[in-house]
Amino acid sequence: MLTGNIRHQIDTLWEKFWTGGITNPLTVIEQISYLIFARMLDMQESLAEKAATRGAKFEPIYPQIPEGQKLRWSNFRHLSGQELAVHLKQNVYPYFAEIGNKGNFGRLSEYMKNADLAIQNESVLTSAIELIEALPLNSSDVKGDIYEYLLSKLTTAGINGQFRTPRHIIDLIVEMTEPQPTETVCDPACGTAGFLARTMEYLNRTHSSEFGKFTDDDGNMIYSGDLLEEYRSHINEKMFWGFDFDSTMLRVSSMNMLLHGVSGANILYQDSLNKSILDRYPAQAENFFDVILANPPFKGSLDESNINPKVASMVKTKKTELLFTAHILNILKVGGRAAVIVPDGVLFGSSNAHQQLRKHLLENNQLEGVVSLPSGVFKPYAGVSTAILLFSKGGSSNKVWFYNVTADGYSLDDKRSPVAENDLPKALSSWKTFKALLNNNAGEDEINAIFGDKTQAGFVVDKAEITANKYDLSINRYQEVIYEQVQYTPPAEILQSLKTLEQEILCDLNELEEMLKK
Image (cartoon, rainbow, N blue to C red; front, top):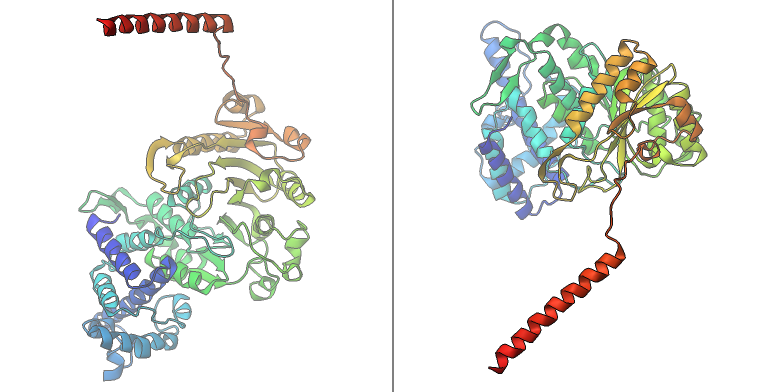
């Protein structure tokens, strides 16, 4: 958790970027990422130098000559604005391309090769340096939160329909899928890596001993994840996978994972729907992942000839929301599970492709849950109504659990201010109850006793009923609404009341007239 002081510092810097002419929030985050990377390189070098004094092997990141040492954060952060700008642009950032595998930063080093200084205002640059220096980047408990707070300032959708998923929605999805430290987790349209980063936080929270939990100076609970040590190599190198074809997003998401304690996350440049994935990542293109968490883009232009043929054979369409769902089914292991945010059109669309996909989910896989979200959840990016599909690969569906979320703890307008109404905890509790029944092989009567009432927010629907409705998955198709009978006053009584009232008014007017005559 961040202190109020750190939040204030970030807000102040953000305002300076804005007044300094940099108004694109993604550009601000990218520029801050470059500076954070520069400082973390120097921090790693300093740790290696200290270890070398105790006999450890020392492989320097920076050349051991005066010009090389000037590239270190600690040696250039005191420069004046103009001198600093020139040094960063001509020396420090170009050196990022030469670092290669010298730093323990996974693929982030590769994505930093094209770093460029976009800060023209010397005052803004100096302020940015001062803030980065003040940030507690040596604290693994805080630096992830710092980046999350920066990402929370993203308020515009990308040209392909991608946008940042709110943290509380991600947390709900992660809690529902319960990723384990031995599994592989993927987001095929990772963006800023929100799903992957929050999964790491979930693992820390669920794998901390009593000794590994403590509170910071502000009373916030910190989870060290001390019980994850035996899985650390897997977590750092093999657990997390993210694909995106936006180079800026690759830099941002790699930095996000690094600051959340995952140095070797597999954040890869790849259009997940393109057939090139079969050549570039053949192992990951089919039957590979245990868990997939995604909020894929809802729009975007596609060249039909370049779509992965294995995905195209599953659903014949150019709609990205349908293709991504099919792709997710394709790359899941048998028994693997997924939670995917889709626009409501996926649930009830009448085209052959829509029905084909829903049929495939129900007949050839286990579609277990559909969570209907209110239309304002993704404001200010978009007002589209969405739902979460929860499914496992293989088998077939029997009953599908539905839940109607009408409030998520925030107002459903562009401001998204906190409010008291929040259905998400109840939705999670209802889901866990349903999953426990499934895992215990509960009978139909036992499930219906808890979830058979379709007037409730959470209920189940038999597969046969969904099939009879052309595989329609919209909650309004099945949820029953109780209408209260309203008793209206008979028109004759209303008319008589009006006449009586009119007479009383007339009497009052007559009295007033008499008073005026005196």
